[in-house]
Amino acid sequence: MSKDTQDLKSLCIQIRRDIIRMVHGVNSGHPGGSLGCVEYFIALYGTVMKYNLPFSMEGENEDMFFLSNGHISPVFYSTLARFGYFPISELGTFRKLNSRLQGHPTTHDGLPGIRIASGSLGQGLSVAIGVALAKKMNGDDSLVYSLHGDGELQEGQIWEALMFAAHNKVDNLVSTIDYNNRQIDGDVDNVLSLGDLHAKLTSFGWEVLEEKKGNDLDSVIKILHQAKEKTGNEKPIAIILHTEMGNGIDYMMGSHSWHGKAPNDEQLELGLKQLYLETTEDY
Image 1 (cartoon, rainbow, N blue to C red):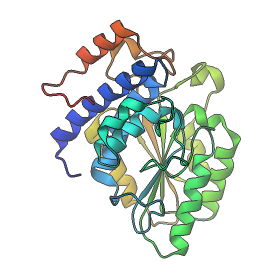
Image 2 (image 1 turned 180 degrees about the vertical axis):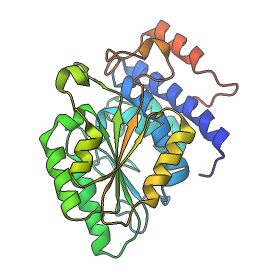
Image 3 (image 1 turned 90 degrees about the vertical axis):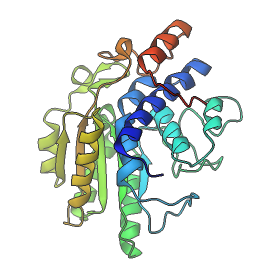
Image 4 (image 1 turned 135 degrees about the vertical axis):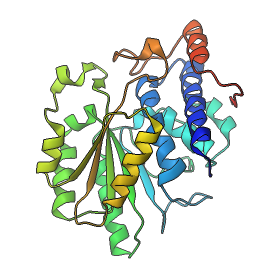
């Protein structure tokens, strides 16, 4: 799907509308982190990543994306639907019985765009590294992208994978950390601080980029393109992307409380008013 920047910015609003309607519809889900990552997903699927439709699980000769923090499935599902992977109307089945759109993405129902199950945190980087190495072995020069939560970096497997990727010069990998400083139990700095994350990643042998304006679409597009240009230089690439949990809805911002809570009817209507579009394409 090819869209200009203004169309993509409108799509950001539409996807935010999708997110809060999806979690409201079943009174379940994770709106906070999903709302904060919209610009990343739009930049990735709208301008940066090369991919083919119809969807192929093998992903040969195309860029591949892996969502590690799978609880933000609403933004992933909405993005996939809006970019043509499956019908937009299917968003209305989110978390319902017999739906392919489970709370955490799974593969057994064959949902286009989903290549791994991602519910247990800490595992996605290992998978992304394995796929990136396979591409190298197969002479496939396309790239692998992954997304991780900042709280997820409290998992030890992440740091083992970081060491492995640098040691093995996995330089066709771009891994982004959604740094909103919020997790289910509070602020990351209070639960288990990550310290100087930029310095830590650098010391592990990664090329590190950082973007403070992670909810500005132009800035996110720019940093992803910069990361793409740095691939192929014997170092994996990390992006520290500073975002705001619940971005776009004022009562959800500035707190961890909307990590995994659905809005009620009144809150939904207030949120939709704040996410105004002259012409909506709600499912």
